[in-house]
Image (tube, rainbow, N blue to C red; front, side, top):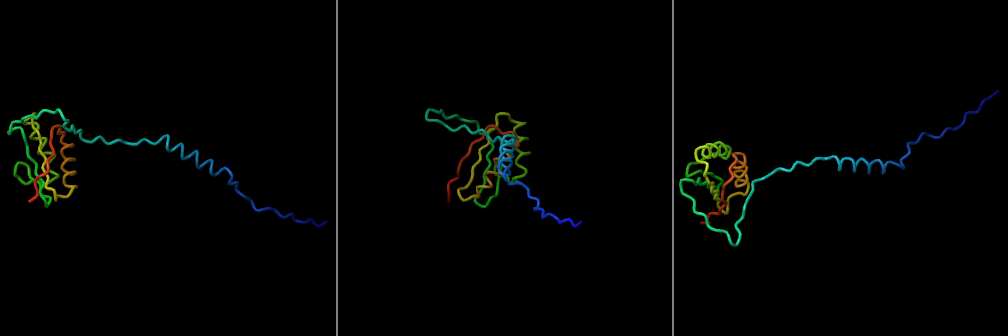
Length: 135
């Protein structure tokens, strides 16, 4: 007796539900993802009825960024990485300290952002921003 071999169909993976599974995975990852919100410096902008507050000169630390990216604190050159420690020390000595950050209009924006980051790390809560006059 001779047996004939039956032709077998090639095995297939059903793809009909692939889109459904992908959609469910997408919803799962969107629903379970936690986005970290970095908290920046709180900036209070003056309003129309704001009063001008006079600050004693000894309570002000003046940080200046010139057009070449050089940074000084009270006319003393300082590296951007050292600003945090310097400001922390000054705030420990004088809890009424106000930081005045003044940047030249042609100074790179990243320098100002780096200085602001250092102020945030130093927990400086009172500061002012000002643009220097262009030469």
